[in-house]
Length: 65
Image (cartoon, rainbow, N blue to C red; front, side, top):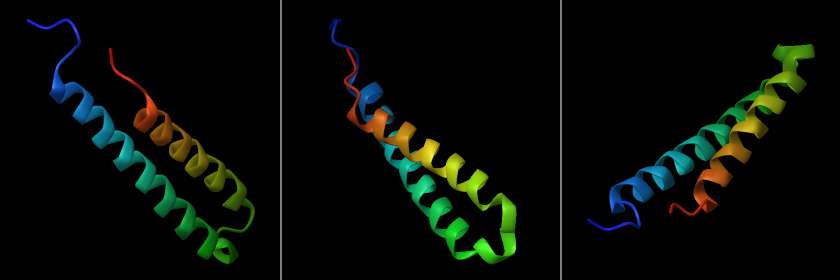
């Protein structure tokens, strides 16, 4: 067996990173376009979507060992 880690693990990490990043972008888009309805919760949901985008970006750029 190789000691580098499986190819599938790295691919799954990149896939889930991209999925989380896209969900964060879509959530931020829909939050900002619905700002008049959300009123005081717009900032909270925007913050949560930005956290998702950062997490997705970290998963995309992380190197599996």
